[in-house]
Length: 388
Image (tube, rainbow, N blue to C red; front, side):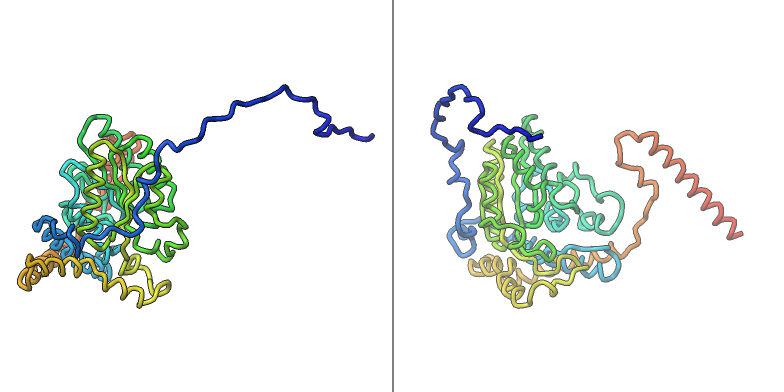
């Protein structure tokens, strides 16, 4: 039997529909002020650096030198088996030091796994900053005491946490700003986009610092994003984007300081992209020669953050050869203490497995704890019997 069909022309005419033309569409926010400048902001060699507080410049320099020595010492510790892994931030020290020094005592820092220098500059014990990378228990320090969230190994998961804390602080009326650090690879994660969207909608007092060091392990930025810059991503969420030379410590401190104060005034979040470079490999387990050439690295070494700031300080008469030597000597003393303490075998308590998991231990945890205690006691008894 032939199947009947109804053509479009045979459909019954719909009731007359004459929609009212919509009003002319206008963006809710003028995007122009949100867009980053075409070139990264630089301060060194300009009036901005000349007007900067000399004490701040010297503090930045001291922390940069100490941070560089920390990186080399921690990398050496991996070769000695004292650390499981270490993601060096050599070449990126200006981003991390400036991030730490721009914070007030009540503010919070949300680092990624590469940001050990930032947490040490914030005041954390240098050994505690390496605890996670050593494979010891938990994160190695009390986040609430230091106002430093755990060093985050999963990419970008710390960003929604930063937004949540900042939003909660705003609801409570606390004068707190959260500064969240992430690498260029982390901007490809969903957590990055979710965090920026929530932060902008809630006008949360949070600042996002993207350390664009050129690579997500071996993947160059060109294969991660087609955006003109990572700072341009900000306009899509309704927040301003700033672009800064990540090897210019004064510029990074200035831009982050402005973003922090904007957040503190209740004007919402800012996305800052610091253009820098990862001179060392991704970690000690990575062979960077497989995906980049030595000439590229050498070009960035010529734009070294320590040498740039050192030149500014000596030019202005704020630093001389004696001062340079004193700062280097203090960094060596720090490295010696770090080496000595890391070479000591840690005193590990297996019962720490059950500490700081829940405020009140669950029945399952109590059962597991009792089982482990019994096994340890039995093992100790067998050892004593063997000695007899």
